[in-house]
Length: 253
Image 1 (cartoon, helix red, strand yellow):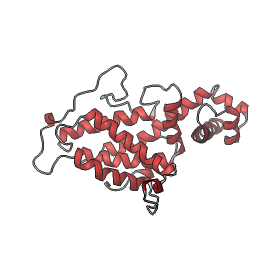
Image 2 (cartoon, rainbow, N blue to C red):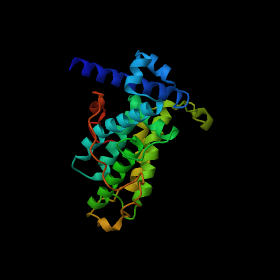
Image 3 (cartoon, rainbow, N blue to C red):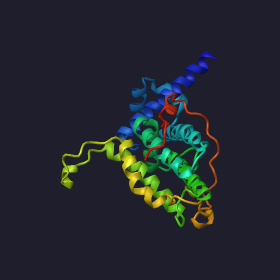
Image 4 (cartoon, rainbow, N blue to C red):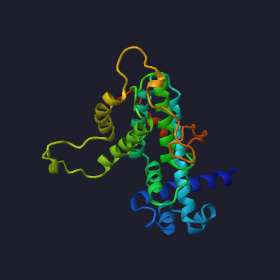
């Protein structure tokens, strides 16, 4: 049992170290030697768990999906207008991108090397499928504005969420816009600002519950689309014990 626990700890260290290296230099420039040094694990110890860099990259992506699931599925179980739960989800995802290097590296890897379209192995696909599922729920409960294109809304919300992290991680030259006095804002502040722009377009007007048929909530095409309307399978809990602390405590936006 002690040997098994030690092996599990070593594997977790390697995934964390790989995520750090992938996040800093990207997949192409990362080497197994650099990752083993980052983890303080011998090259032999690394190869015992992962024989190739691609295998290690897929492990980082799977862990990023698992960590995302620990947050999103908890929120999906909440009661209330589904669009408000989507707002909560975007705040939680933006916080994960900012605070968790595994999630951040997992989304970067999805752009940099051939990634599976399985939500359990690709965090971006998991986010898309979950947001799309929740927006279809918003059609059903009347919280999404009638006539909204659910697929387009999903893509827009996904782009805004990932963009919020970029605005805080990349120096933004407000002076170029003639606003040098604007202070830097956190990811959560950016999400709130952007939802103030999005909400009037996406939220149904106050009043009687709208008919679910009024919004464009038809299922997406099949065939492995990242925006599959079929809920992804349950994922194992993540190994990062701090993830659940990232779930916002109240609705924001």
